[in-house]
Image (cartoon, rainbow, N blue to C red; front, side, top):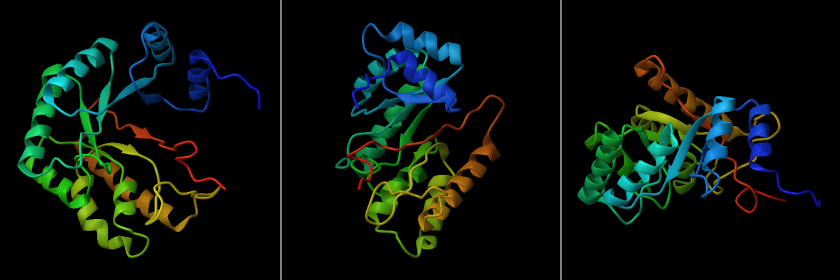
Length: 230
């Protein structure tokens, strides 16, 4: 419509005006670090960083930058779906050890095309790695498992992951599409299932939470062409 792109200041002001209390994003580009840090502090936002680690050394370097910027947590999509079994467990353990040394919480996202490609292998990781906590995005497993009906059958399996909830990505999918329109009142049949799963994860998190702990809930709604369009 001819309107110019919002500036960084305008974007963050709009986020605050909409009632949000934090941002999940990437490290600012060179020359933008100062203004981003200033605005985050002014609005009292939390700030999470997306990471795509493939090895321990690479992640160590990223964590130094994240710590220097003052990130509150890391959301890690660990590479990749072809790393399985003992190699996957070793990689995850190494990444989490680096995070512990850096003093930054790292939550591994349940995501297709990543080391957490499918539900059952991710359950194995959780059972083998006590220190593994997750960014829960069950939309990937609902889609990959074509779960449009009888979703309650997934509850015992999802429950294993939900006990490790540290962050939630609030997107609703069905058995054919990764992001669906829940309707103006959220009355799509799948929305009720996701809200039930999110509530379960929140209850598990709250039972373990201490003073000052936070549970990021990210409204993950992608733009076109990622989003559905008519």
